[in-house]
Length: 144
View (tube, rainbow, N blue to C red):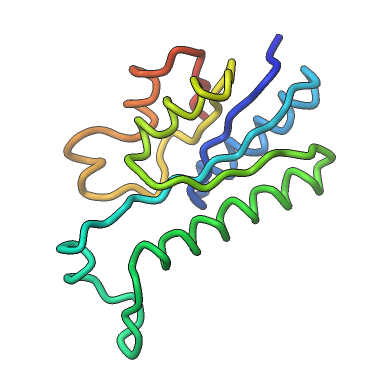
């Protein structure tokens, strides 16, 4: 039924529920499981307003990339513990468009994602990432 399943991971409870559902489907269909975490790239102006650690502000993109790697590594461990060996990726960019582009580039035939992630005020004003992905994706999207 499905050959390649993409799970966008954001560290939220909804995202974790989606991961467990995708693992079940991957086992059932003997599909490849792909995990993706996308962190938002910050401009220099945005970075100047943010402090990662007061004693060492560092580079905000590096901190975001590090956190994204932790999120996808956790999801990878969960999948492996459940008996599925996934491929894991970390990308920078706008989440909804990045998920859709990744799915198209890697010929994914299903995206499984949580209905509400960690979100932000932007999500409430402009719509959730899952809502945007369902409208843009060229493959089926299962929202858990």
